Image (tube, rainbow, N blue to C red; front, side, top):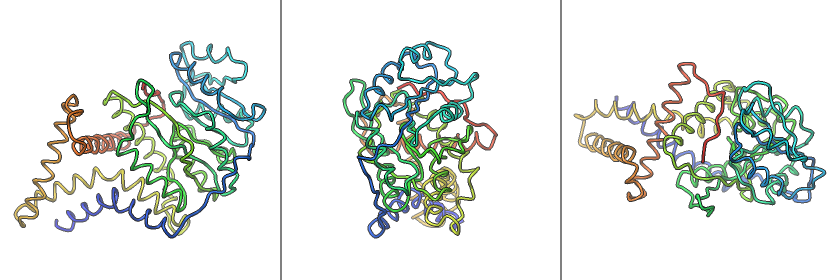
Length: 377
């Protein structure tokens, strides 16, 4: 039981601290430079996937048309996932836009696949309707593909408030961007920002309609001996989700879709074939998604060890207090604005791991998140 307790604690520590420290230290001695060239202007196809977005589609269209890239090399496709409102009609008003619409709603990735089949660009850029881009976003993200080793590129996430002002980054976003930066420096990213990313068309040839496109695109790149990189000069701006329930549901969907991708690509965990990337994939994705199991194992084994010494009693009390404070914060979110940052972080930690637990339950019971509904922000 002692071994089980300590293995669980070490696994949790490795998932959240050990791997970030290891990838940071490795980046001090190993740095794969990206040979960016802002004069590199290949043919680009911009693909925005939408479903029943009549309330927001005009803003997205205006933002897209304002992007600074040679017009003769910039194809714009809006892929409507069988919208039933006025979305398609609004898109059709603009001559520069190409509307691609599947006959039946089959999910985000299917709509993207339909757009890819009609695209002519060497580089494909994917974006969500809620994501606002800077004028130079396409030029910046495309410059990375001047490096022949790059298969896909991720933007960085930036939040904006309701009034349009730039929001302060949460601890989780800073943590995730830290990881992505050093993964990109050392070898390759493990995941992309689904709201705004780009890939070579060759990477998108084998497009799965039932797998999370941002995660699967990295894996497709790795199979082609290419890499995924992060560009800090390419932000995607989107609003914070005010509704905690929507944020929880979004996280469940994201993790469930991610687990589904990993389950179909377990061969990439073979270090003898994929080397450093296998360690990254295991550490960043699988270990993180296993944390709820480690937390439960640590708590249950700790109960059996209460009589084994004062340390185990103290650690058990710490766990109970931690969960109690997080539980109160989650149950009474109206008081979170007045709570200190530590309690907010505890609440977010519990929300994330609760969402991961629900995602695993859905995965094991055969449920999948194929159909996609953009989160209202």
